[in-house]
Each structure stands twice: as C-alpha cells, then as structure tokens.
Image (cartoon, rainbow over all chains, first blue to last red; front, side):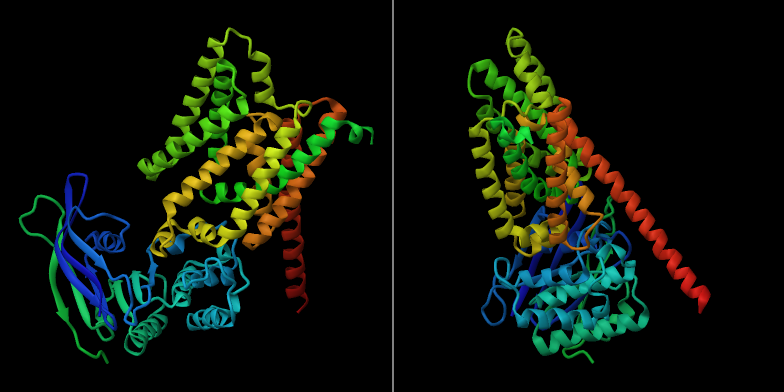
Length: 235
Length: 281
C-alpha cells in the first residue's frame, strides 16, 4: 500500500530552484534511504513530503490511512530535534510518553499498554535507566536517542527520519538499522530516511534515492539520479 | 490586620490570588516559545486600547480587550513572516502601540492623564468587583483550557514541526494562546500597571523553571511563588504606599536572586560532599 507519492516535485526558495523532477513512492513495509551530497536539499525534500513546505510545482500525496484502514500516524525525527532547548522542563520519561499522545491520547490518560510501549522504546535505545533525568542534562547523543525513542513510542505507520544516527557510535547505528528493518518487515512500517551513511544502510534498506546536482543549471539545483531497488527482502 | 477589613484590599487579594493561578501557566509557555517579550508588547498595545476607550468615552477595559485581541492575530502573522528573527514583530508592535497610545492621549486634551497614569503604574484602590469577576471568569477559562490542552501545548512548545506532523492545528493553537495572553494582560493591567505586567506574568515561571525537572512541577512551583510574590507585594504596597506592580515585581526579583544563590550553594555543598567521599575512599 502506498504511503507517500511524490510526482514531478519542484521547489524553490525565492527565485532560486533547489529541487526539480522528483518523483518516488514509499510503500508500507518499505525502507527507503535518501542520500545526496551536503546541501543537496534532502531535508527540504522531507519537509515538502511532510507538508512543512509547499512545493512550487508537482504534488505530494500522503495516504490518510494505514494498511489496515486506520488513520495514518506519521513519526518525524528532524535534524534539529535533538538540539532542543536545554532548559525545557521535562524528564526523559515525560518526553517519550508524549509520543503516545498521537495514538488517540491527546485528551485521555495513558494506560498500561502505552506505558509498555514507552518502556520498550526507551529500552531499545538504552535509555530506560536515564528516564528520570531532565532532558536538558543529557549529552548530544543521548538527546538523539530519546528523540528516536519518542518516535518509536508513537509506533507510527510511517517513519520520516532526517539523519537520525548523528552522534551514535557504529555499534548503536547497526542496532538501530536492524530495529528499523525489523519494524519494516514484521510490522509493515514505511520508512523514509535521509542519511550520509549509505554503504552501511544499503544492507538494510530496500530502495535508494539519490539526489544529484542538475547539470547545466545556473543554480545549485538537485534532481533525482535514480530510484534503485536494492532488494525485495533486505538481508 | 486592619488592611483585611478594607473592601478594596479584599478585592486586591482576591485579584492577586487569581493572577497567581494564571500567570505561571501563561508565563511558562511564553518563555518556552521564546515570546517572553510578547507580554510586554501586548501591555504597550493595551495602553493604546485604554487611550482609545477614554477618547471615545467607552469603558477602557472593553476597548482594551478588543484591541489586544486584534493585535494577537497580527503578532502571530508577523511571527510567521519573520520566522527566523521573530523578535522583529515584537519591536514593531511594541513601538506602534506606544506611539498610538501617545497620539490618542494627546487628542484627548489631557483629560485622561490621571487614568493613563493608573494604567501605567497600576492601582489597588481602584479594583472593582466587576474586574474581580472578569478575572475569575478568565481564570476558570484558562485553567480549563490548560487542563484540556496541556498535552498538545506540551508538544507544540517542545517543537512546532513535531506538533505539525502529529496533526495538531499549530496556527490556531498559537493564535488562541496569543489572544488569551492578550486578554489576560488587558484585564490585569489596571491592577499591576502596563510597565510591569509582563514581569508579573513571566517571573514566577522563570523562577520555577530552575526548581523543577518536570512540566507540571514548574507550573505548581510557579503558582506557589506567584502567591508568595503577589500577596507579600500587596502587603508592602499597602504598608509603604508604593505602587503594587512595582512592589510585587521587586519581591519576585528578590525570590529569583535568592533561588539562584540557593542553587549555587547547594551545588557547592553537593560537590564538596562528593570530593570528600572520593578523598576518603
């Protein structure tokens, strides 16, 4: 089932085009990696997909429902989310619990099931022991981990991740990619992830979109090189 | 004790109790959304609302609320237009408010100078029953809205993009928050004074941010601090004949300085204990 459909997308800041001719799809159960050199407008593309920016041409379609007909829940880890205000008055547990609000709990109390999800998410990134710490007291890598734990706690149908492994050691990165792959295959999640680490991720992802600089353009404008299928069932 | 038998002091304490409940809720969100100066901007705009009311002969409280509500929308629009340097919107509106207030006052042939002074510096003698009732209504509304929307507001304050992708109507929430802040300022300005109303809203939350790790803890500590600050400020104002807004602000600043010193000494004591333990082992 299609979760994202991008058709002939173009985007420009003021008069300057930065993205052109972008078309791709992300389906349920698909792990798509998005790569490109520094400044290749990868984050801009993600923000267009999520509706945070409006494309100047073309269209972006996000499925309103998931593969079982319920409202599609989107989880987003932005590049800056881990550089949150150090003075924000929240414990790690409070922040990760806030991921569950999206699951119909904006106006309801969290129940035992929600708490189980929160615990599992914090354990999956090795932050359960730190749950009573103030988020401002954490290191950069730990902040990144709890941002990921928050999204895992939401248990979204579609994960949109912008360089989520910045600040993680290689072992933790491997574990993280395995977890994403597991979610994709076993729980039918759709994943769109911006990364610089494509050599490592290609073992886990099953589609690769690369943004390359458009030849002949006077602007620093990027387009899609290709959308390569890596494997149907990644190993 | 004699002060508690005066009707105006009873109303002053009732009003200060209600202000203490509202201020930390609004103040915390203002600080975390980096809009601490918005309260100041709205209080300057309030002055223009008051001057307009006095000029056209309408109850200034109502013109004030109306003007502030309109500006709350404009502020949100400017915040989006100047997203990367949102303080510009505050500078524009603040100066526009003060300029408009001065022009409207000058058109009023000087007859409103006394009333404007009351709005600038605040007065506890003039708090009416009607004002206390309006404040009570506002406290109930803000309390209820906080209780219902505290989770969406937590996420919105943490990160607007996260809130947007979670499907929250962030624009509407921001405007509603601005309007509520504006109305609150318009209502409490005659008591505290336009020049210091933002301090009374922001300071309790700013102090309690240093005292609690959790979101709800900050609100709770903020209410306690605001209660101590406003009630002791009112007593000081009555005993010494000083303006209430200034007295409350000074007491809150003393509490602020005290908590900073306390935190500093507590950290030192903790570190010393830690070092002496590691020396001993």
